[in-house]
Image 1: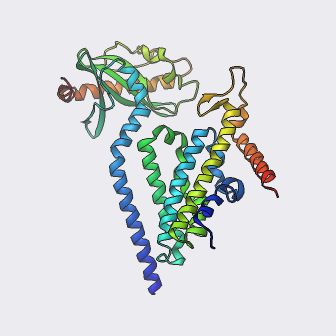
Image 2 (image 1 turned 90 degrees about the vertical axis):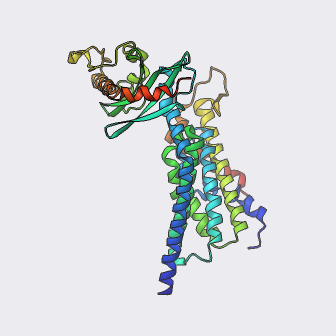
Length: 197
Length: 197
């Protein structure tokens, strides 16, 4: 367990990048990645929750009785999710309208609970912060990449700006639900091809 | 037994802590969230009704109690005079309540504009009440008094073809708005004086 903080951080970016390697948290991955903006917004909201819940769970890990640990984790996570929800309503209302129900659903995102249970409850505060940040950034990048591919192909735009000329015929299949599955599958396949030793 | 007490204590402390944190954040963001909601949900309708006013009607708002219900009024300043207010009322449409924003010239008691804010009408049929300016334009200049009815019911309102129920809903909302306006007008005029400069 003698990993450095950098290693804890970096592992979230490739070795354990949530949607592609752990294949966790697929609900927001598939549902909100219609555009880059949505994907990154969702990723950042999740990162916030991950980092703070990891810090608090790790700080309280010696106090929390093991029999009620899941209940305690959920209270911590739900608190931070509500904080994010309120802050998003106050400062980024249009994005909040687009992400809608998926913000409160971060509570049941298995990445967050998984990190609390598998990592933060056994490691120091600093290591848990690095872990939460790494996994969160990895999740954000993954959602951004997926959103990017879907937005470019399905809409012909990137971050709302037109990429191709007016002759481009949007491949609308990509912005619909089945397109999300196909796109995720292809990206998983690509990750495995590249990562193969 | 000791473990039992520890579990209860930890859960209680954690829950009360998170409750306190959330209450504090909610209190601090409440006004901003209300402003954001008004700006993005009702803002477009208010702006189109009070087009050309020299103030921000969403900031210059006040509430008046009509019986048990509190209504918000948005002030439009034209030529330095707070001559127009917008109020929202509701009428029952095909898929639930239709929110209608009505702008009134308080001197002449005439309608300056009407816009649909929220609705759950059938897309492409009833939703045209919001998207077709021709429909809402017919109310312009009419006195905001008595009852509004669609022509099929012996009234004066041209219904949207194929969307009579929606048109009735909008008419009902206008009738409601006329009632509210008549009842609160004395208070309204008092409040408006504070916006004159």
